[in-house]
Image 1 (cartoon, rainbow, N blue to C red):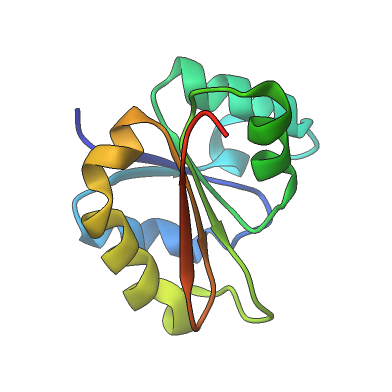
Image 2: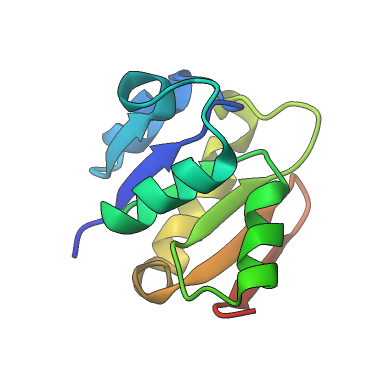
Length: 122
């Protein structure tokens, strides 16, 4: 399975170009869904369409933990500046390092200094 990434509303659409440069199919939620959709709808779409959620929102990790879901995988970036320029190298490295785990169900939390990884279900 190839990596397919759904970029959440709280991240810039500029991420799409950065992810596509790596050969990953990527789409911003604003291009396919209601910008005001609840997180549950976004998560359900990602699961049904085999996409990884890329977000700045803590709610996705919480939903995974509360439901003990096995997917979809979530990549969560933390920090004040979540634009591609400062974080792209770290995000790209994380996706490459954990590619097979992302296909099976994982939560990755990334900030400028560290990365935490949890296999799903939590």
